[in-house]
Length: 366
Image 1 (tube, helix red, strand yellow):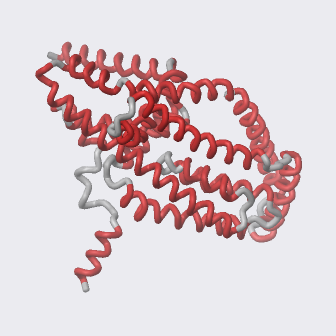
Image 2 (tube, rainbow, N blue to C red):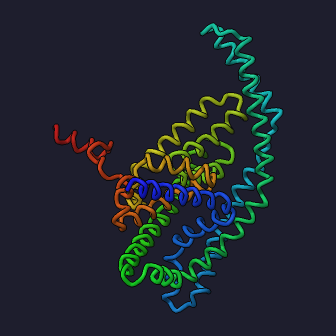
Image 3 (cartoon, helix red, strand yellow):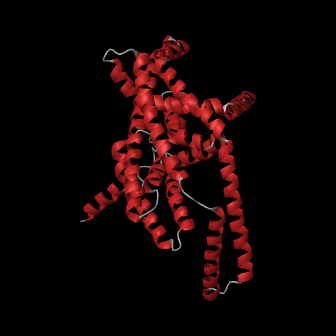
């Protein structure tokens, strides 16, 4: 029995290692396929609505895809044009940073008594490292352009064929699982389709709302290219937890590097994104997306770190809906139900922090 358990454990580790190896080696093919899958789920309701009116499936898919690509390309070109118009001279920025560092040094020396020579050594080293890494990052960004364009070019083709052959794919799964498990497979497929479609559609609406809120707030504060920064922050919000931080950090860094007196503006940006994040977590997302995912934060954070290790930013964008699909599949297979329970948010309801619960307890006390 022990030998059999060890063999099963070794086989499981080998299969898991092989799976991640394939994910890494074939990422140029699998990343656009994964993104296309969720894009297909997002536009599926529109495609199906057009098909029901008697339009051929292929034509319906092409019509919806063209409109979707036009919207995405317009948003991408707008952001790229706005960001490319930013005249940021790295040499001038370094001069400004050195001047700001000198003023901070004098303040710390006067109030705290820190040795200015030692502090100057470490701060100079840090700024040199920052700007050299910035320049190398810009170089690597241009080096990746060809590969990125190739993957983006695959998206519409993948999406078209995923939608066009969706019935054939379903029949393939039925033949694969056999008649005995056909009912269960159909139930899983319907649940995955319903939840993923609702989640992706709701997420799109949330991104639009956040883009409006972010852009409006940044325009009121007076940030240059506020609309571009607002849209970019809304898109980055697709990455749970980390995306909001990065989205708010971009305009903060821009103001820090380009403004003579940035601290008041930085505080206003911080307050803006804190308020928007509070509204998104407690009002916008719960009412629009709902609780379709129901995965605990620890599982999401670990998945984000692993996805970033395997696929980078693209992996962080798709990992949460992938985790939700895995949970649905595991929940419907008896041997895998414990794993579905592990990554879900069940079992901690009595310990969760909820504004609704706090308010109800306050009313009961009164």
